[in-house]
Length: 157
Image 1 (cartoon, rainbow, N blue to C red):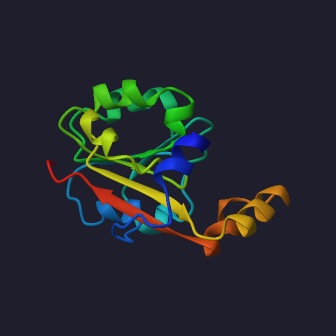
Image 2: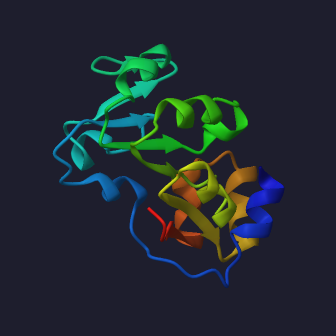
């Protein structure tokens, strides 16, 4: 994943600066979010959050199988690429507007071939500062100021 991000998420990449979660603001139907993103309750107060280790008000991972069919939107964390759950989620999400979201999202338009409507990831602009933040044990929040979020939209969806 690091190699894919290094290749696709380059500083010269252009796209909208929209937060991937904000793509679902105002949707009338069910929105399912895979991953407990920071501030999710504030951004999408009616979202059904699916998490591997659910907290109060969140659903366990297996619930995605019955929450996705018929949903209007789904924000799926990019970590589903590394844990290999993304293909199954996309097959269950047929007809749902899907965005792959998170700093680890590879901003490769090839992913649109699999029914993804938007890719919302992170582009590093100061590699040395990000490396220092990671080596110091910082979270993704600690390196956000050293880059920018980019969202690519599938023009076919």
